[in-house]
Image (spheres, rainbow, N blue to C red):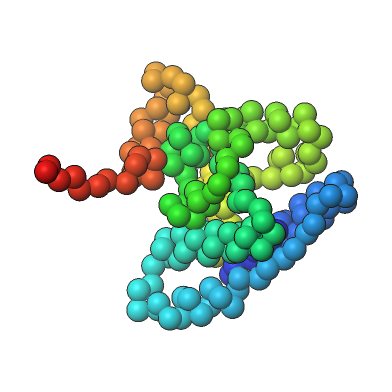
Length: 191
């Protein structure tokens, strides 16, 4: 399922290319494109008084999540997450109630390096494996490394070694996103 949503054109082109590869390789895979462009245009024009680039990037992820759940419901399916250990538990690199909103997360205990290794083991196209990771949520087409300021390899090393030169930077990224990785705070009352 590809869901273009007012993103950089080359990211949707890449998504379609990857979609074609998987449908050519596996006969049991259906491909659909659901354009969320008009929905996002209406959403952003309705909320133009509250214009915020980061907010709109997160809203794109949430609109995609809502779409995935509708498609899953119509097909008696579930929403499968694509987050890995670095994103989900290391630095919280996902949108709360967006791409973090899934029913099952089969690769969440794998580092990005392990995901790449798994892809090679499953004979996924090297072009797909080597494509710079991106969430496709920004108008300018920025990728994950540009957003995080570190590569996944650097993050993995820093997560494993407190003496790593990037450890402090890793902690800074993690700290600002901890709210995503912890349970929602609740107010408790004594009886």
